[in-house]
Length: 262
Image (cartoon, rainbow, N blue to C red; front, top):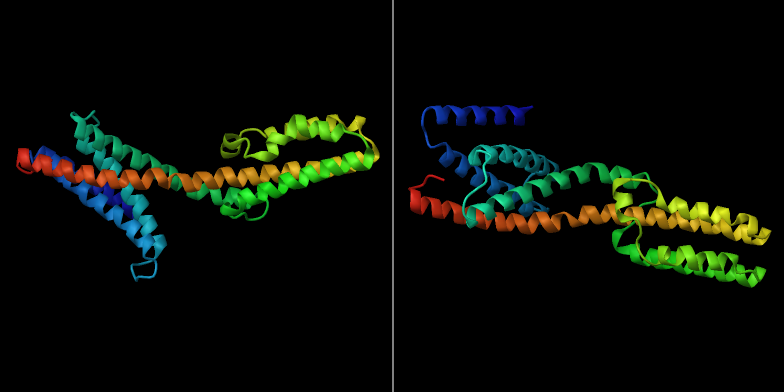
């Protein structure tokens, strides 16, 4: 509520300044530059957690609200028009990329942890390749054991046809991210369709195989969502650095040619 009140107050002040024929773009431009500098301090706070710089949660809350506030100020500053010139176009594009990636990161930070907690045990991202390798070895051992014990190759043929690629690498990345459908269930249904061709011993192996298919699906789910959480800062942070450089260059150029009017 306080952030909304500040936003309304600033918008009203800028509108009054425009009505009074004051240099609104000058005011909004320096407000944007100062605000972006404050936003950049959040990265400093994250890298120096031991210093008494306030609670991380407070900084994060400030970062999100100030970012949304500056998005509105940016729209007023540009009058929602396409900028002219390579520098201004680059600056506008960088600002929008930083804003959109920041919004995406905030959304992911709210929805991903509860989704991960609802699927299986906690999984450390760096351990996922090793866990995937163990699952692949377990399913190969299971299939080979079924062949040796039953002298039938039904499960082995099914593995080669449907599961070898599935256990080798991450699968259904965007399905997991969007929670759209359950394509791995098609594998289980295909396995169930083979049941009438299986012996009693093979059916026991098939039950174990179902559990391994589901375990791989849970692992891929963690991989997809944790990858999204870890990937967006690789867009947000470098473009933020470029944005600050472009903004400083823009301010310098405008002050040089227009006497301080941004």
